Structure formats: structure tokens, C-alpha cells
Length: 248
Image 1 (tube, one colour):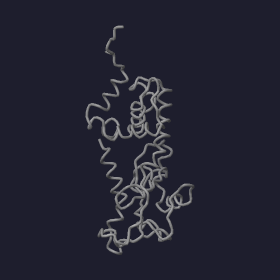
Image 2 (cartoon, rainbow, N blue to C red):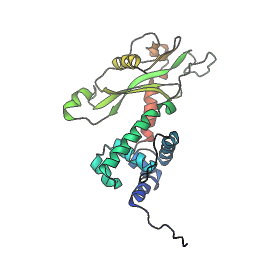
Image 3 (cartoon, rainbow, N blue to C red):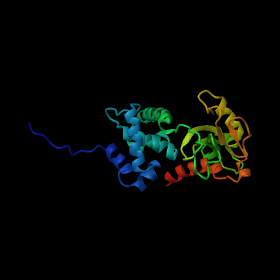
Image 4 (cartoon, rainbow, N blue to C red):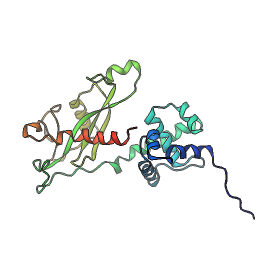
């Protein structure tokens, strides 16, 4: 039996190759992550079994559609044209990847570890038993015109206020998103503490906070009075690092 080489490459494969394989810069512009990060994300989602290739759509293409939507706020009708898929196919795979990414917190979030008594780090050795630092940071969003008032920050940005908790190595321990930009940091912290599966502080440990929070069991504020300001900006630096890595 004669064997003929496959010479026809589908338009969908060509399009995915155009988005991902050309260069890191091109991949960043299209999917907001470089090729290494994209490949690792696809591998993690496929290895866990939460996202599987179908007869017609591979895992990388599913992830690329998902990233295109959340990175550039593109609508279904635009994405189905770009990827040459039906609107139903785009919607189905978007929700599959979304649910899978939400489950990755068990893999991506670090476990809190208190500062040891023999710590020599000049920025952290003063805070024995400290688990890290927490703060709020704003992420710009697009909302309906009649909702912009609730999402407008004191500086006029339309954003969500995200509570981030980091360990001393700038690895995220806990993240709470969804609050409007007008929400105060203390209100978000109360929500994080009281919700099911929320932020928990073991007895004898604590997190560092800035003046936007109140001193309470498990939370230490006003660290500037001790001349230690490094820890207060850890969440902003961690968020900025992520932002720089995904900037266009």
C-alpha cells in the first residue's frame, strides 16, 4: 500500500502557529505571555486532565482562544472569526479552560511558611512568625456605563480592587478578586477572613499590613514606625512583576 505524506495543514493550525510560534514578542502581544509560559500552562492543564484535546480542537488552541478573550476583551463573534471556529465551539472551550484555570490555585499558590527564629534576612529577621504581607492592588477593567461609578477608584480609574497575600519571596499565597474599585481594603479583608475557604491565619502567626488596615489578631500594621518599609510593598512588587511579564 502506498503511503502519501500529509501536505495539507488546516487553517486553524496555521493560525495557532502564527499566534504562538513566530517569536516570544509576538506571542506576548497576542496572548499576554511568552511561548515558555504558554507551553507550561498548556502542559499543566493537560497533565491534570482538566483540559483535553477533542477530535478537532487541541489543548493549545483551546488555551489560545481563552487567552485571546481575557487578554484583549474580544467578543465571541470576533474570536470565532479569528480562529475559524463556530461560536458554540469557542464558548464551550472557553468555559472548560476557565474552570480548569480556576482549579490551578492548588498548584500555583504557595503554602505559607513563618519566618524562622534563625532568619538572617535584614528585611525579615525582625518579624519572627510572620507569614508574609498583604495589600490591595487595582486592576483596570471594562464595565457597563451604568456600573462605572462603583468601580471608579479615588484616582479616577475604572478597576477592581484585588487583595493579594504574598510570602517574603513574592509568591502569592492568597488572592481575592472581584471587589469594585471603590471598596476599601479593610472591607475586602473582612470578606476574605469570613468567607468559606478564605484567608486563614494560624495561631501565633501574622501578616504585615499597611495603614489601610487595623491592628488585629493575625495582622500587624504601621510597620513604618519600625523603619521597616520593604515588606509593605511586597504585594505591589509581585503584581508589578506579573504586569511587566505580560506587558505588550
